[in-house]
Length: 279
Image (cartoon, rainbow, N blue to C red; front, side, top):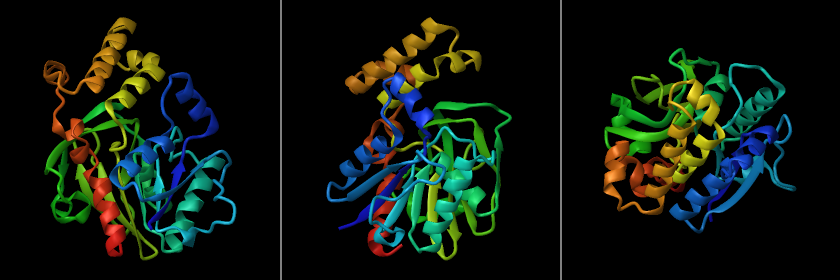
């Protein structure tokens, strides 16, 4: 049986903010997705409640076949105790030979841990749907993207981006907003595969996140006003409830890249297969 450690990288304050907007916490999003992909997986989900997340009682890193990092409300280019603690834990599990995977924050954390750099994206926030993510030549042949189109969309929410790749990193995908949308990183002989977007999100998660960050999104120009934001959320929730509402999918510019779970989560399925095959 495959045993995975899922690290919910949000701080307590970040999770409280999500709860106020009735958002599922990041660790639960991954639990939901992973068990749909493989109900036999044994999952331990921990939270970053302390500067260095603590493993379940009695567990060591080598007890796990893989470690998964979620998104986060942290900023990788700020050396806070929480960022430094998570960076140290990522280095430790890689040094222990335990492969990693993750989304959004995971890309940025892994890059910083390996000596690369992350900064605020001068374009601002990429939110809702990351458009026209395009595989690089390396990405088109990498096992992470088996079964994925060469150009696709993905659910997203981030303001930071990778600005310099570290040694041992291979750029797998990018788009016009962020040059680094996916990468493979070898650190200490161990593989870490990660994507800047969120395959674990579903439409309802984007909708609830839009509620949590509505004021920011209005200020950043995503919504004209509060009523516009409410209408956006209602449209996403309606389409989540009934995916056959093709007029709403057309209006939002959404297709199978994000609406078909098999396509949306293909990278995660590919990583699980690679673990099984001896990544």
